[in-house]
Length: 117
Length: 222
Image (cartoon, rainbow over all chains, first blue to last red; front, side, top):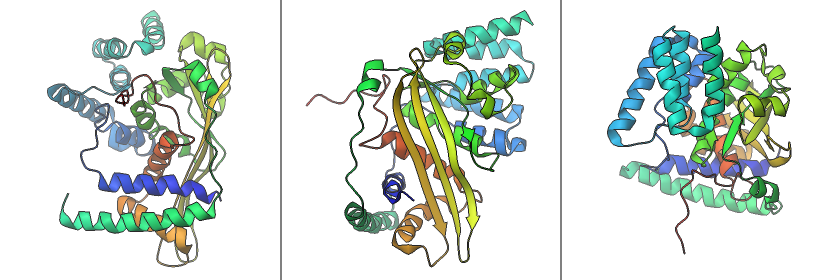
């Protein structure tokens, strides 16, 4: 089955295995793990856990002068909203918009629909 | 890096070179992708629609979804928050990825306004147990379209497979096992890590990958 497609996987594994201090554009914290747990093992990623871990990773990024990755503020906003904490939800969504203006239409729409309810 | 790791890396490098030779002689030359449409559209933001699932693994779309943001964003694109988008669509009467994949583009344009939309189909996913080993597979087809015009900008396919166990995997299987096993052996479900590897390999493929986006660092002038 398409054996040539194994090659990138091998090369990539090799690179991931051997490179240390790989420079990324963004600080991701545990975003991928939280997403995975949220869907496949929700007990490991309840609202409290997510809020704590995301805020820790944002604080870390700020302390090191790293960029918080796209989507993380908005994700935090969603979890605050699920928890019924609208002031913090709105603040987080506003941060997503501030750092990533591409998100404006989506976030403004969500916020206006939420406030209309 | 410790010396032990360095030695491991050197021997891995040897394996890699051997495998490159094996594979290079084994397969046809890969045609470079035609990037005309992608360059003309020049998208800055990508909306990933939760993948359509052709397999019986119900978690597959969401395992995939947890491993797609990092490679696309690190390639230089704004990626809409996948879980927020998924929740938003569910709240608006689209309970599963099947329905989410049928939203008209003009509606997406109006409500979310991404430059491009990435549609994914999960073709094969999960762990299968065979006589002397288990094999984990992730396989998906990707299509990036321009939100305004609906034109296809780029297509890709992500595939990775890992065989565990000692024998019977064949040369390539053993090479992959040797390379991948050390990364994922401690995990029960191997698909998240495999999916992450396959997605990065697809985005960064030197011949058929996604071109760097607007947030990617500019290459140094020669």
